[in-house]
Length: 113
Length: 116
Figure 1 (cartoon, rainbow over the protein chains, first blue to last red):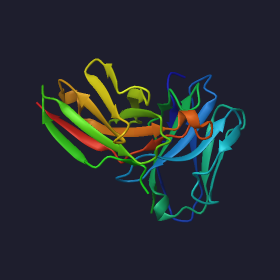
Figure 2: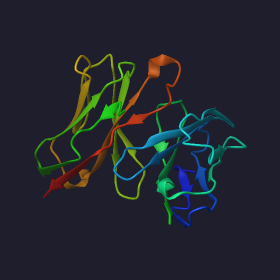
Figure 3: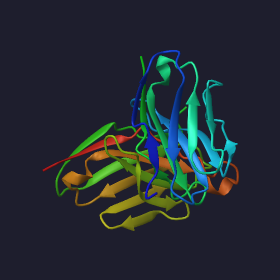
Figure 4: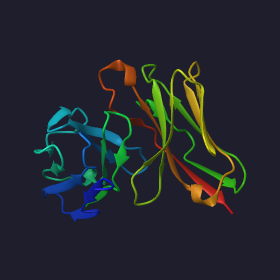
């Protein structure tokens, strides 16, 4: 597609529930990243994929968070047993070259009530 | 520990004047710096960047200055326009490290308001 597409744009869920956030990167971009932006903060790195594999998942806050990219294109960020502190905007980005030429999606605003 | 700091949460300027947004960093391994602009409900969009081997990069109304010894960079917008009103994020990369050369470290952002 022309840009990075993230769905849903908004998600409200109850504490303890499971959520999946989807990212559809720009076609041909092998590098894909997830960032999280909490209120009043800048985006913070979560995970980086090169192709199908997670090259760096050091930013995932704990084992409730997991991400996959099975075919090297679409990625899904999965959060188990959501907590109110998980409320944030989750941003996905993709690029041809690692680190440079990032294109961000519009994000998914997750609210845990 | 914030490695990239934007100490002004907001800035207000008159249309036509210069806007100066500041950014400081603490990690001496950072060697590439970027500015992103973000409108509400949209993702950050790339604005301008600078490598640590330069001290200035210009693109139209936007100029970024880098003072490596002071670990400080600034974004100048001149003349400022109402459409420039947005949150501006400073970000840094360790391109030459060979390790985490893909991981952007962002500041908290500065909300710029340009008044007509």
